[in-house]
Image 1 (tube, helix red, strand yellow):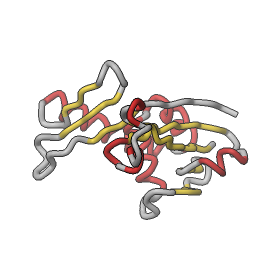
Image 2: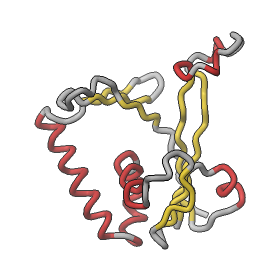
Image 3: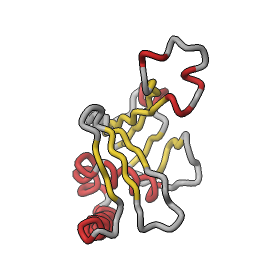
Image 4: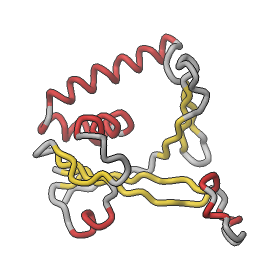
Length: 154
């Protein structure tokens, strides 16, 4: 079983793409993260997958962003953002890691309910979620994620 993550760059304002250099400015683009959970990798997955995780062998096949992140760290990132898709996979292939991630997730949720965790808002127009953690020292920037997730099983 594999997780394949692909990323698609989109303009923040499609009406301005005719302006010279508009897409070269990182502030003018956003990235859509698309996940696929598949039983077998095909050529398309291997070609376009920026991140590929092998849950059966508990290893990272490709990490096109930060090669310092290992299987546990990448799985934690994707589980935190997409538990609905990864819970069934981890239940069967890595229940120990699932238990660890579930307890961490519950602690974050409890902190949010107590008012000490990150505050998140979701835009009704774009389904973008923006979170900021006012209790973290020196962290005044929000973290954005765009939930464009697709689940397929081959």
